[in-house]
Structure formats: C-alpha cells, structure tokens
Length: 138
Image (cartoon, rainbow, N blue to C red; front, side):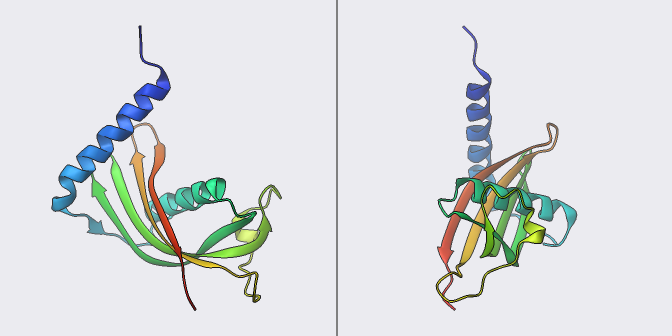
C-alpha cells in the first residue's frame, strides 16, 4: 500500500507549515517587492485568489505594501498588497495586464490582502498557504 501523490503533497505542505511556524521567531527578511522573485510569488498568489474567488470579475494588484522572504527549506514569501476589481470577467481569456481597475461607484472594490506563498524551488512548484483579504475603505 503506497501513498498517492495527493498524500505526498499534503504531507509536504504540512511539513513546510510546521517548519515555518517553528522558524517564525527567526524572522523573515524584507525584499524588493518589484524584484523578479517577489513578483512571481505575487502573480501566483493573485492568480490563485482569482481562481478561488466567488466574484465574477478578476482582481489585480494596485499597490504592494510589503514583501518578505524566509528560508524554510523552500522559500516562504509573505506579501501584503492591495487588489482592485477589474472590468474583466472570469473566463474572458484576457491577461490581467489588459484589464483596468474599475473606479465606478457601485462597481469598484478594493481589498487589502495578506498572502503566504511557498516556493519549492527544486521542483519549481508554488503553493498558496494563506490568503486573507479584507475590504479597504476609501
């Protein structure tokens, strides 16, 4: 009786979360939010957010508040960003770069999101471990 690949993934992610929690006191280092690695992690987080969001519109980053990285055997990115609701609907096969943020009353929505993305670089695999978003009052 062997483990399925899903069991291995669950075990691996649980291991990384536990290691992350035990190393939390070691802290993470601030990184350039415009750097290539931070942008890849943020792009992955927003793509995952959009895939699981119940909103029928896509969201995109309007401002990066902070970006940090921590070595936990993989790289754990802690990202805080503001997202804005775009005019693009899910399923329209548009890239986020071609979508603009809606600023019309009743249609606009801005969120402050806190993401944790782990990057297992030896497999070039990313997982969204945490996704907490709350409305921004403007």
